[in-house]
Image 1 (cartoon, rainbow, N blue to C red):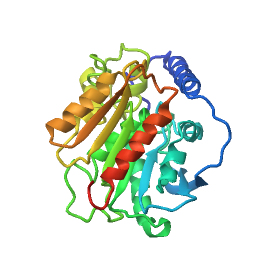
Image 2: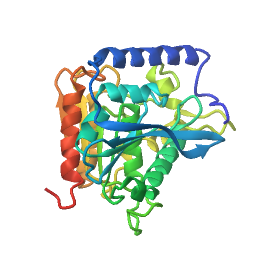
Image 3: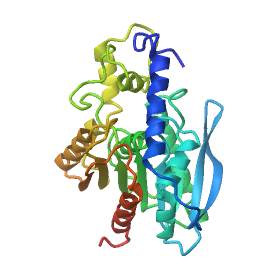
Amino acid sequence: MAPHQGIVTDGTVLRFARFLVIVCLTMLLAIPLVAAEETTYTQHENIVYAEADGVGLLMDVFTPKGDANGLGIVDVASGAWHSDRGKIRDHLRAKVFDILCRKGYTVFAVRPGSITKFTAPEMLAHINEGIRWVKSHATEYKIDPNRLGLMGASAGGHLACLAAVTADGDNQKSTADPASPTSTRVKAVAVFFPPTDFLDFGGKSLATSADQGIGETIRKLVPSTGAHEETKEDIAEKLKQISPARLVTSHAPPFLLIHGDADPLVPLQQSERMLAALKNAGVPAELIVKKGGGHPWPTMPEEVQIMADWFDKQLASTPK
């Protein structure tokens, strides 16, 4: 992959490393460890669902120990646009798999790759491959490919939003059966504190090369041709193409957004931007604001339960 000429500075690696340390420490400290208890699922680790540049793309599958409800959830396991196994542990801490599997869902925790190797468009392609893999294995896992949910948190929430609003390419509603293994359409999306608009991120654009911190991280998400010095306008156009709030059409599925009003990393404004875009397009959408919630917060399992109950309604064969 060509270097991002004109986008990053010599101090990028150090600042980016510091940013990731802050993110990881925040997540680890925000959700306390709980006493060991009987899980509601069986975990199948490191299933290869695709390959990219000779690298295997992995997912963990969590199947319910109790009665299955015949429904699947694709969980985008990514934090700070990294997909190491620690992101699975973060979701374990939030009891995502316990809560969903207790309800009978089969959960497919897709790891789309990390920013150290892949750009956002490449990660999006990997998520789409994951969705297709799940649909093509629907019979094996006894789930309905036409009633699939999609979720994620933080960077995973961004990528889940992006996948949902660009499903089947060019933001157009597919004429094919959405249950087809070739379709990337899902029936409902629930996300926690997602970045959604990099051109209006808490009132500023992240396209300027002078911006440090998260701005430098975000600009690493866009591909660079390396052919010339990229201008602010070049970068802005590329950031627009990975900003879900700017890509919404009336064909997007229903959305649930959950965001804390004290988030130090991703402004609440990002979920508000996504909500406004969805409503303007006539798409059913809801935003739950967690008072005092950070990135994340200690009582995350409570909101995961709300999310699971919302999926029950959205994925029911007959809308409730």
